Each structure stands twice: as C-alpha cells, then as structure tokens.
Length: 453
Image 1 (cartoon, one colour):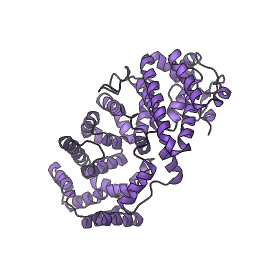
Image 2 (cartoon, rainbow, N blue to C red):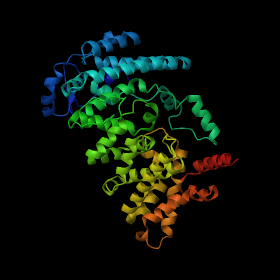
Image 3 (cartoon, rainbow, N blue to C red):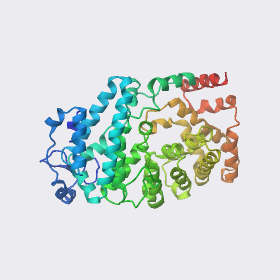
Image 4 (cartoon, rainbow, N blue to C red):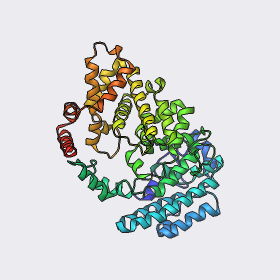
C-alpha cells in the first residue's frame, strides 16, 4: 500500500479512533470525523491547514531533498503544514529502501538517520510546547495517519516477518539460537529508532504539559493532559510498548515511556489498568532496571490493580514474574538492585495468589492449557514462552496437594517460588509435558541436553 492510500485512511481527527461510518473532509481527502459534533468542533482548526498534499512533487524527491524540505517546515515555520505528513511518509519509505539495499551500508544509513531523528526531536521540543500548536499539528492532513499507522519495526524484523511469518524458528540448542541472532543482528539493529524517536516524542509531547529532555531524569513525567489527542497518544504508546517486535526495534525511542507509565499509574488508575490489559507488563519488566519501572512494579502488586485485570493478563504477569526470577530480562548488573526487582516480582505473584485464591486452580489450569503467546500479536519464540509456563504446572501441583486452598499463606507461596530454582531438569520434564505440545517438548528436551553437556 502506497503512502497516498495510508495518508487518506479513515481515522477520526478528533478522537483518533477508527470507525466504519465517518464524515470525510472533501477538500483535502485526509481528515475524517466520527460525528457531526466532532467535525464542527475540530473543523475550524483543520481548515487553517486544509490543503491536499502535493503528492506529485513529493513523489519526485530523493531522501536528501525530502529531509531538506522537512527541516524547512520545522525550522523556518516552526509548524506543520499540509505536506508534512506526506514528507514524513516518503522520508521513512526512502530510508527503508536505502537500508535494505546492502547490509554493509546499513550502519552508515542508520547513523545519518539517527542524526536526522535527533534534529527532529530537538525541533519538536523547542517548537511544540504549546497545546494549541499540537492541536493544529494533529489537524494537518495525514498527521494522525502517520503517527497512528506508520510501521515502526526495524529493518531486521521487517525481513524476519517475511522469511518467518509464523514466528521465530525452534532450534535444538542455544548455539543455533545464538547463530540466528548473530546472522540477523536482531538485538543491535537500531533502524527502528529512525522514525520511532520522532513518533514517541510527538506522542509524549501530546500527553504531558511540558516538553521532555532526554538529559534529565524526569522523562515522561509532568501533568498529564486530558483531551482526546492526549488520551489517544497514551493508548498508542501502550500499543507500541506492548509489542515485543517494537520493544526490540525501538531502543532509544522508548526511553521516556517508563516514566510516562509510572506517571499514569500514580495519577490515573483506570487508564493504567487499561494499559496493563493492552499487555505492557513484559515491557515494564524489561525496563525494571530503570527506577520508574521498579516503582511501577510496586504499584501493580496492589489488590485494586490485580482484581481489575483481565485473567489472560494476570496469567502473563504471573508467568513473566516467575520466569524473571531465574532469567532476568532487565540489564541491571548491581546485585542489590537485582534482588530489589526480584522481591517485587515475588510480591506480585503473592498478590495474585492472595487475591485470586478462590479461582487459583482454574486460573492455573487455564494458563497451562493455552498457548499464551497467541494472546499477544508479537513475533516471539513459542518454545521459550512454553518454557516460561512450566512453572504454572509446578504451582498447580502444589496447590492441588493442599487440603484447603484458602489456608495457603503468603509465606507458603514465597517458599514455593524460592524452591522452584532447585527443581531439577528431570523433575521439570514432568511439568513441561503438561504445558507443551509434543514438538515444543521435544525441542525443549534437546535444548536441556545441550545445556547439560
């Protein structure tokens, strides 16, 4: 699909939601409204910039010309105009073409585009401190479509999604896993940050009252704005942060997100629960070495949060916390800091058990019987996630041995969690058979044998 089509895709310029029945702006062909009231409210702002993008001119641009025009819009006008979104779409399209040409050129392309991204972010910080300017920017032809629909995955993941559409291949040992990662450079490809930094910056600026500064510790913090664009911006950030591909593709771009999530958790409980139900918990855990995410974990353990979450999300949180105790996904090297995070994970597991004791057996059985990776639209290793779920079978067996489930204490749950690391591979095989299909189980056995040798 060309950017001409995407830039005219139906999305309400007031609420930033998709709908099948909307009113279209006949003048520019890009703006849509979900109701007459929304149109009447936002159309006066939109009319200031309502002009059909110059598609023919933009189609002729190369990447340097496209970049020069974008800088001209942001530097000279300190504003967005009717061509800005089309230029951003074209620029991103050309950047990916350049990046895909030859792998050896990718590092140079990435450096140039990261420099460009940095300039764009600085211009946003300087120019878009006014809510009025941001509202006008959201009204420009194609800007909502660009911010909400543009593909943000790295070049590596774009290729992998084509080569392996069903997900990461199952390998028989960790060496083959490592060779696969090395071949595709999955963890070091920063090409997603090219446009991702710009998108996240724009969404953050639309969410909080003040501009952010990556050199300061208060990224993503500040008084939360409460309007349609701010609410939609935070939901979009939640969707991005919930996606494993995008978390792996956007390294630098996501830097302010943990601070924003903590900000929401502390001041807008219902919105925070909605974000958790989107699936942001694995991202919070991966960023737990940042103080903001650790404080967010401390909030999640509260009963009012646990009791408000969807069962499938509770299962993911339970599984991820238990797995993280053995294989921490965060990067912290400090032993004391690691123990603090692990203690918080244990407290979340205890909170889930304590608040769901009546239905804990059914909850564990549900987690054991389904492929949780299918609940999240991510490209991930099914065998790895199956391995994470082994502990659910272990916990289920221990619960079943109790004569009265309601007598299970927090101290008992803590003991079970601590004992898990001492369960041998042979013992784990019995639990693995209860949560994996035969193919995944065979692959898991081969990996275990490889690790023991």
